[in-house]
Image (cartoon, rainbow, N blue to C red; front, side, top):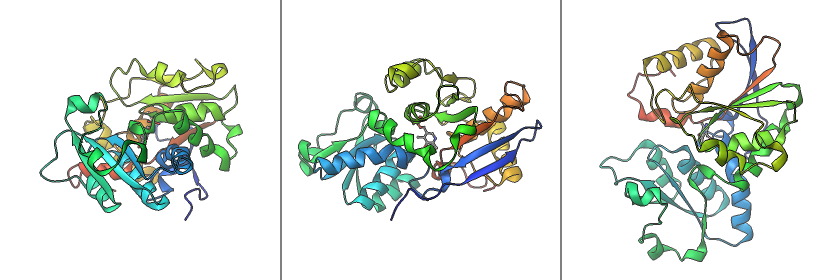
Length: 296
Ligand SMILES: *Cc1c(COP(=O)(O)O)cnc(C)c1O
């Protein structure tokens, strides 16, 4: 099975302006390894294979798209997988963690302090030796992640776009896109974390020197911080779905589409701009919301 299948582009008329945008539907890549996560993982998987590693180990929260994508990708490529999960083991596992278990991932819990320092719980070493494991950063952050992302735009003619807009967690995806596009094409990131001031630097170090400093980060659309949301965002996501039939997630892409729509409404983009919005997936994370919150 290949995950590099043909990727679809949807053209969407925006509700509050006369503008049209294109949406790159990475959410359709795979039901679980959706969106940017497959691209971020693929070079790590290659290296793990070259180094003859037995298991992939990575870090994430109970609803992490990266955890479940790593579990699924590991199974698909014949690796064992280990997830180090932030916080105590919950009484009831999240749907995401249940999926990860079903993909054969072994889960280990780390206290918030230990998690912060990315300490691997001692129990893990009862199962694997250190040199059997290939460790992937939280969120797939890193050069290899960035390298994998470069191929996202290969299947479309991306040269026609003046702006490319993407949701930003670690910034690895933004860095890969920036590396792949021409100098005159603007890459704009919508940060989903509150006041993430170290973000710019974390992205810069992934970029070749000539591309540094040439991207824009917007911090006004985080809705209070990572995985925070309010009624306005939920309402927008439901309206957006009614209008476009494109589902979004409340952690990343809901905020992304909200931001794009808002920027057009405030004339910060012009109708002459040819904007490509990257739908990075993440729909599985909506399962943490109470049933009925979203109409899709
Ligand atoms: C992980 C994720 C992102 C953020 O990607 P980064 O490369 O960490 O910036 C964006 N959108 C979705 C849906 C994600 O799951």
